[in-house]
Length: 155
Image (cartoon, rainbow, N blue to C red):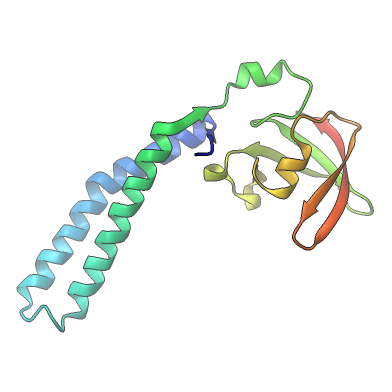
């Protein structure tokens, strides 16, 4: 099983989602199921089927979050700042030839959100730059081919 790296912020966000699903969302779905069952014939009741599907999704997500949080490894911000190589939790600026510099924070897969500048340590760029230093040029291997990026700075 791969290690699930999470920042403190990411851990708290997922914990909040789990708490919401266990309480408010579970109750909301249960209420919908109850109302649909009172509607009569369950075999052809679309509302009942939709509520059962949502219940299955919610329970699956709860189970997924419980496992993720139980096995999560929190990123030690203080330890990360003491190293001069890119680690999970590092904020790094990179540049591909002919393009503008881009800044990303390396996070675990559960927390990745490229729109927010958070990329997974399991992504092609994340894998390629881990353990490297500013000034180094690294090859990024993707399904469409490879390209090189220069690590401009960490932090």
